Image 1 (spheres, helix red, strand yellow):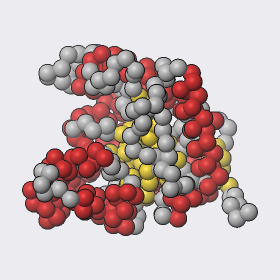
Image 2 (cartoon, rainbow, N blue to C red; image 1 turned 180 degrees about the horizontal axis):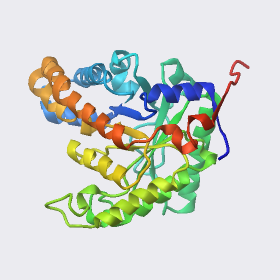
Image 3 (tube, rainbow, N blue to C red; image 1 turned 90 degrees about the vertical axis):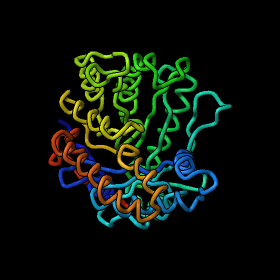
Length: 346
């Protein structure tokens, strides 16, 4: 295998984002508009105040980064969480604007206009994260815009010498309900095609944060109320094909599924032969803490985080210990990586 060249800063940042096994065992709490809605629903509109979101993210970061290798935060609502995180935990900062312009075809991505990767570095980032809505079956003119966007992003990250994580979320223009059995049938191909595209060298993406290739609630044997869309052997094959399509490290996102479902997905992925390098676990880790905060305030949330929240993270860590692969395995192992120095002063 050809030796993999990685700059020293990027290599060090990847190590900072990973645990001692080389696995990215990270927490995601960069939700913005959706976080406001969740908090407002939990506490009621008459009680809600934006400071609650700030405090919630701060406490989640302060308590749970003791047990994870990194945390993904946004600066807009998570600025207190950035300061509160454990010093041993890596920091991933969101770099994209939340949502998309519904009046423009293609769900086109935009970066935060007041940010740059150089600015994220000054704020302590060990990586930048960008979410991109992606439909591999879109018209070529839409795909070209997104591909060019990612090429520019990759070049900026290379020039600033910081890892970039890209989170592609697949969609369809005709089947709008992405939780439906109809979407479940077409999701595997879309995820596989997306991974195959985004791990091409031209994008210089360091880590892909991907969805599992199936809607797990429709897998045979893992649901009681939903129709079966996938036989277990077919679902396992989709996991394996998606993994085999990647030429760069990839990690799984929790995509808002319940905690126990996310655990099942990760175990199923590992037993299916998917060579994933970790997770960015979001709502599956901390969602129930919102209700604890709404009921018991700061003390109620701390108690929940110290018990159930910590338990969620530690259970995930056990699963990763058994099934996840080091991020550098995709390159033939750490011994096959050549770390080089670059000069950014000119």
